[in-house]
Image (cartoon, rainbow, N blue to C red; front, side):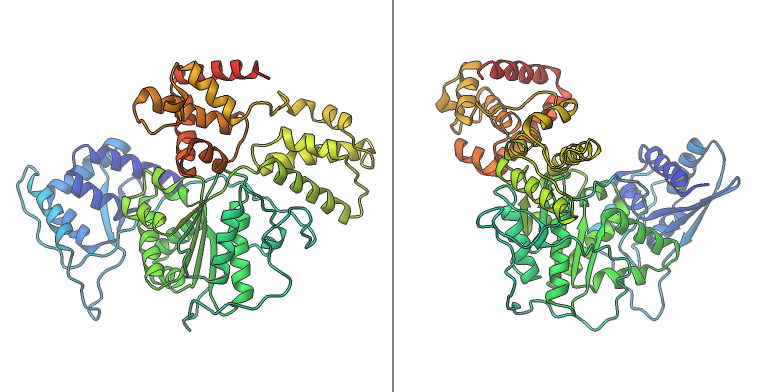
Amino acid sequence: MQATDLNDIWEHILQVAKQTLPPAIYSSLSTSLIPMSIDNNSIHIGVMQSFIKNVIESQQTVSKMLTDAIQQVTGKQLNMVLLDLFPPKEEIPVEPPQVADTFSVSTALSTLKNGTELTKPTKQEVPYQEEFYTPVYDEPVYIQRKETYELIPDEPMFPMEQTKAAQTLQSTDIPIDLSSSQLNRGYRFDNYITGNANRIPFGAAQNVSEHPGGDYNPLFIYGPSGLGKTHLMHAIGNAIVERYPNLKVMCTTSEKFMNLFIESIRKRQGELFRNTFRNIDVLLIDDIQFLENKEGTKTEFFNTFNELLDNNKQIVLTSDTMPNDMDQFEERLRSRFQAGYVATMENPDLETRIAILKALVEKENNKNRNLVIDNDAINYVALQFDENIRVLQGAFNKLIGTASLEQRTSSIDLEYTKKTLSDIITTERVTLIDIESIQDFISTYFNIKKQDLLGKKRKAQFAFPRQIAMYLCRDVINESYPQIAAAFSRDHTTILHAYDKISKEIDKNPETKQIILDIKAKLSSLN
């Protein structure tokens, strides 16, 4: 049986058992039991805590509820074989259990039918759980270009020569296996194009690379897919490796972190896993949101996170979900994410998109390709493709790919660009509408005063139109969050929240979707 099949069966068993087990007991079991194998006669279950194994074996009611769930899901009366994955060693002093946890489980057991009480545990260890999933990762944007600064004025790139800052971290002499690190040497600060939309995250990233373990710890980089979060994270790692070669840098994805954790459980190499991840100096994890519903891995990550942070080690996380929207993460972990610095990546503005396209042209010419694109054509492409950098790059690749086949690379003008990209441009974008015109229109549409739309009143009759106006400023005219925030006298995170909320409402509420479609249609008539 494939591991993924076994894991699915076990998840189903837990859901059935959840209906009869007291919440405190279910919580302990779901994060401490790991399915190892199953055959026609028995199911072998690994137990991360000896205390939990004792509970199941000594409390017949708990054992019966589990075996009943197993029978209901598998349709067979299977023997439940418990394997203690980490038996206590006599030479290691046993830590006293947490009173609160012991009490909650004991109290829950006392409510069961047989009325038996649970004996206090002799040892409590960190719970683990294995999960299997296959997230889809988009590749980050990678742009090679010469070290030149005329593309974007005041671009905060590294100077050619710089004095190394005083080292913040002090690495230990513990040997660490960094072979699992996925740090990509091609993602650097000097080939990352910045603009108003990503200048703040870029500055925070540079500060981390200069002072790891300093003010921006942990650094949480948020933004939708395709904006260069991964590129920026790897750039941090590469800069630290160059500046502080003695520091141990581990760069990975949440998927890789989970797989390494599962493998350590399978091979009973938990100590090796913990030694690897808790003695490094810098931990970089991409797409942390994929651990949201992976209970065991999430618990191990929490312990690793705390260990590193307590020792002033640098942590950098990327995610397409804001910490306060990670509903499946415990509050204690979400609050730790927010305790550092949350840097928000935004869609690149028009000037940055133009700079990116010019950099792509330069990259092609560095390959000895005679590529000449009119400025009007570049501006047209930058205006039409504003979703994210990958979409912009895809349009560029289609344009030059077609031009190469038709031997037009030396004379790509606006007319040829429009013709070539016509099949992927549904509606040509215009920018005659501005923030103020949207505010005026929404005030009229919902029959409220503009001062109430821009004010602080939280009643639904004002708050809902206000959030729609913020959403439209982003969705229709692609204004940056800081610009919208200034126009509404709000913080940019408020605008971000409004955009996410209306986007979700559109997906699940047909009435809201119809309102937005109606407003957009009427706004388009203003052009």
